[in-house]
Image 1: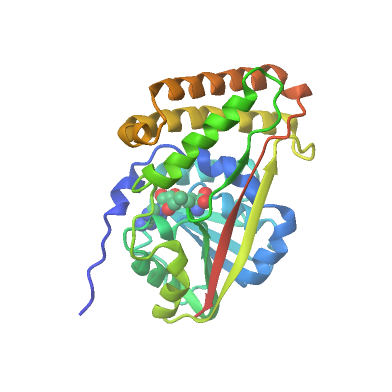
Image 2: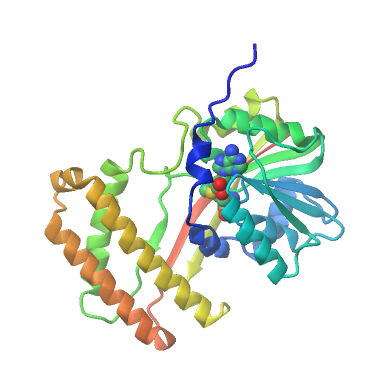
Length: 312
Ligand SMILES: C[S@@+](CC[C@H](N)C(=O)[O-])C[C@H]1O[C@@H](n2cnc3c(N)ncnc32)[C@H](O)[C@@H]1O
C-alpha cells in the first residue's frame, strides 16, 4: 500500500513572502568551488540538471555559468520566488541556460529518468516529508545519474566575527550578541527554524539516501566565508549586504526575544539587555552607513555545509 505523503509544509512555503535571504547568500558560491561542485554533483558542461526547490534560482545560476550545451531546470512551489528568478535570468541573459518553473516537489510534472543530475540547496530539509521529496528527485533522475543534497545544519553554528569597529560600545555589542546568540542556540531555538522533520534531520540524510535505493553514497565538505572588507567584491555590494544583514538581525532578534522572552529571562538576558543590544546594533548600522567606504574593521562570517551524493 502506498504511504500517504505529509504535504503540510506546502502551505508555509506557498505563502512565504521574503526571498532577500536567498539572494544575500549568493557569496557562498564561489568560482573556486564550482569545479568541485561539478565533480561531486556529477555535472559536466553538457549535463541536463535539475535544481529542486530552487527559490529565486541562486544555486541554479551559479551552476549554469560553466555549462556548454547543458541546461538547468529549477522548480519551486512559491510563485513569487519563480517570478523574481525569471526576471533575474532575463537581466543576466541566462534564459538559454536556466529555466525556472512552478511545481510541487511532492508531485513533479517531469517525466521519469529525465535528468543527468538532480540536486538542491537546503530544500529537502524544509519538507514535511523529506523521504517523499527525495523519491521524486530520484524518479526524475536517469539511471546512473547523481542525486545530491547540499545541506546546512544547525548542529554546526555559523561563524560571525562582528569586526574591530572603532565606535563606542563595539566590544559590548560583540559580548551582548554572543550572549543572546548563545541562549537562543542552546535554549530557545527549538521549532523556530523551518526544518519540518525531526525524524529525518540533516545528519541522517546518508541513511535516507540508502533507504531510497541510492548507491555509492558519499558525504563531501563545503565551507564558505565572506569578509566584508574583501575588495574583490564591489564596495556597494558589500555595504548593502552588511546593512541588510544588520537590519535583518535587528528584526529577527527582536521577534525571537518577544516569542521566547521567559526563556531568555530565565538565562539572565532581560529587557534591559535586549534594548541595549538593539541600541548598539543601530549604532553600528549608523556607523556602517556613514563610514563603510573608509572602514577597516574586518567583519566576516562563515559556515559549514555538507553535500550528500548517491547514484541512481
Ligand atoms: C530554504 S529555501 C532554499 C531556496 C533555494 N534553494 C536557495 O538556497 O536559495 C527552500 C525552498 O524550498 C521550496 N519548497 C518548499 N516546499 C516545496 C515543494 N513542495 N515543492 C517545491 N518547492 C518547495 C521553498 O519555496 C523554498 O524556496
